[in-house]
Length: 409
Image 1: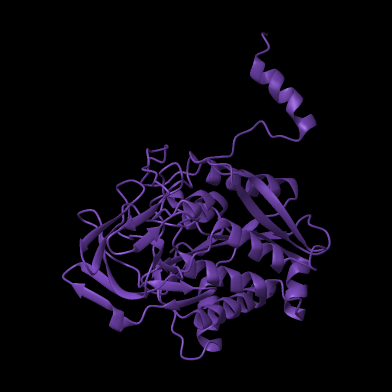
Image 2 (image 1 turned 180 degrees about the vertical axis):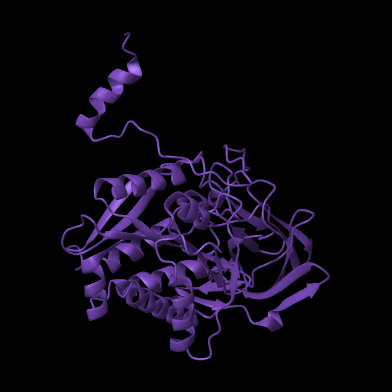
């Protein structure tokens, strides 16, 4: 029999600890084409309205500004375009602005036809972020204009607080300090543009035969409130409480703090550098970010005989909501969803769970957990305008109750 190059390649690869087999694809009722698409890359520059001494810049990670032109002596048009289309109507923007002399100035947002304003502006002056007062926001039909008091000190105007890939790295590097004996910081590989795809591998004692919980976030760049819930959730698991210690003696966490670092740093509305919604690629893994994450999860599970029992994917939308699968009895944790939601309502004052249940038809992560692993999959959505203190409480309590419930299964 003739030996092919691939056969020879696969014979030699185990020496380098590289798998020859591909990860099993997961079938969905409604496939989505996730092959790489063309994107429009914004030009990084500083715009100047010379006769008014007003400037705007997108020259930083997480910025989004496609044009800045004078409308009249007191107003500029802020042009915001998506990376490509079709795309969700979630116009993301972020830019610096300042002026040579103190003045009040207006900024009118312009989106392509069919798209409009979603996010309440956040301002960063110095190191402090705040929400723009509603009295400085004007809406006429679908057109939004804001008023700012400008000076020589730059003000960042953004749809959401900017959490770039470097900000995320600083956070997870700090959060694992002193915990290295049970938190292993690893990389599953690189994104399309060569940015790191980190994972925190968390367990105590022997990792063999430990059931696995997966935590994901930042598939969609602007969804920062979901990322904050992920932060609080993970910090609670790592807080070395008696509950945490017992849980990590028996279970293993794989936490992915940023799945789409390219989209985050490029200021994308929703997609990665390949112009694709990563939360539609959990079937055939056409994009490197999902392919590498899935490959790592699969290899880790098989190598250490750890069954995946739960996957939580943290996102943001207009309001707080949990998207769940209706199929429960056949999963690894058939009563988890109902028990967890009851515990949240009991332990968070005046809290009512908002659940939308439906088995995934498109290739999203919660469907991948169900169809690929018979595991519970939940998309954990936090509202765009949910206060950060509330998010921190939700994240902390939901982590505590998750650990308590799973320990008694």
